[in-house]
Image (tube, rainbow, N blue to C red; front, side, top):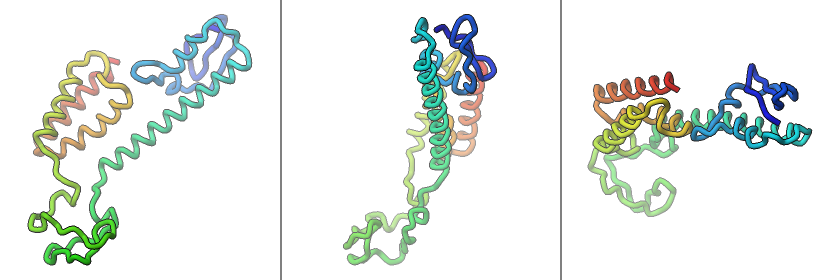
Length: 202
């Protein structure tokens, strides 16, 4: 076996352009992990083997598994995007709103239904960020600038593997929300420019 290059959803498993297999999408053929093209390398490792029923069956199985991975990654990215854009407030969790005018009594159940509930150590402070917590702007700024510097230092492709790159592209704009508006916009714009440059260079 010596597979030819992929073309229009099909490729030949033999160098003399026989044993044609079809139904291989461009996404499956190009799928890679950390720069390692899975299907191409799988075929390359089997060069010289006879193209029999067992090999074709194994080939079809690998193609199907890669297609499933692509679908799972897409679903994970979709869910991650929704999770990052959602606010984990008390309402979303189904918890009753806290009445700050009257402190919790010893018989008031806590968030998990246990009694007595622990008193609120910060009852006198105003609510912050819908109960989600507050990030440290300095730490956020340092992290974003580090990611931007890594992207600028790369020449031909993003410095992270494909999955990490997709995650960073989703997380970066969300993390910037913790910074002042103008600064956040500048960082988002600069990062988007670098990612476009690397995409065009790939």
